Length: 314
Image 1 (cartoon, rainbow, N blue to C red):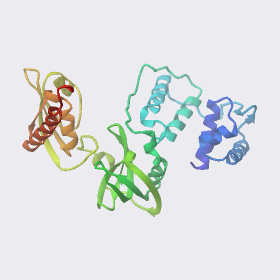
Image 2: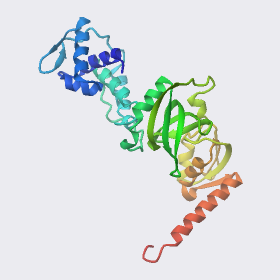
Image 3: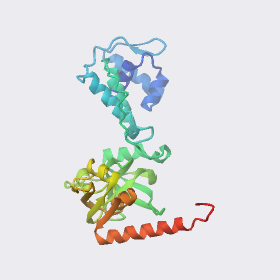
């Protein structure tokens, strides 16, 4: 955090909290108490009335511009910023916290919308995000990093990456960047990055890259060859599918018997097949034939596992 940003953050904290000691401010700003003392002097030198009475306080708040947000808008933003997506240790946690502090510091009425739960579920463990701040720094500064990465198969490799962007998709944070090992743009789940070192080497993001286009036809995270799927859904699954939007390249046809024919063009088939299997017997992949065969093999293997259960287990 640069000094100007830190000074504004300190002012927001002082507007929100009645008394804060130098140790409290140092912990929130992640600097030393000595730095905080220098910051207090800088704030006072700018003719902002600040004093100490069991903790640092502002004499009044009129020197900062008021927020133009309505009470409902402020309450909604605070609910969003407190969602699990920004839990402790997650990317942009500090940024979300600073925004929340500034909203609370505005001194305006805030609507109580506790009945609204923005349930963005994050499946990542906090301990898996030890390198988040360093990765954020690399993305913002456009500097290469070297990471130790563990694949879904449990294989660990060292990769040199040009980190283009970070994205929250399907309950987890991902890093998207150019991988020098694979010579292509790849996606890395932050929870499987075990070590990171920051390089001084800078990079430029290609003009034709955008995170939206990158995930354009993906079912969730994975990318690959485009596949045209056709699936029949029945029962409760049909209702769920026809009342939801899953992807932009989708078509839904409702039949008189209540079933639904769902069509989609997907980049990477693994996630889609896993999603369809989640509906059990209420979903049948009709096309392509290769996907039907793949599902048949998966179900046969599963049946074999459950068929091995002894009488006492049934």
